[in-house]
Amino acid sequence: MSGRGKGGKAKTGGKAKSRSSRAGLQFPVGRLHRMLRKGNYAGRIGGGAPVYLAACAQGIQKCC
Image 1 (tube, rainbow, N blue to C red):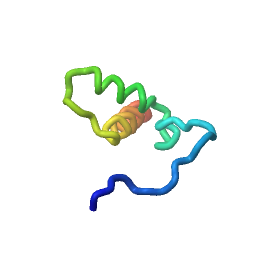
Image 2 (image 1 turned 30 degrees about the horizontal axis):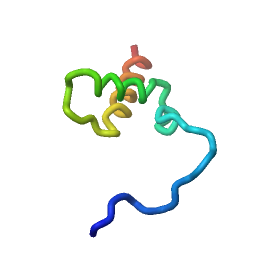
Image 3 (image 1 turned 90 degrees about the horizontal axis):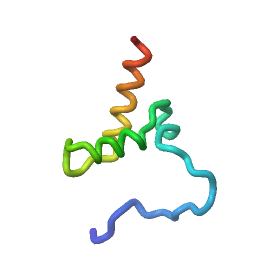
């Protein structure tokens, strides 16, 4: 168990796909991640935190 990651080959080229579109959201996941990192919330921010926050914000926006 010395290796890390899931293996597989890295894709080269192709169009970049935003994290918002991967998650099927309209809110900017990358921008929220940057804001969470810049604010004094935690030393490190996980990858799923901004996706969850964007989904919550989008849900709140839809209902109100």
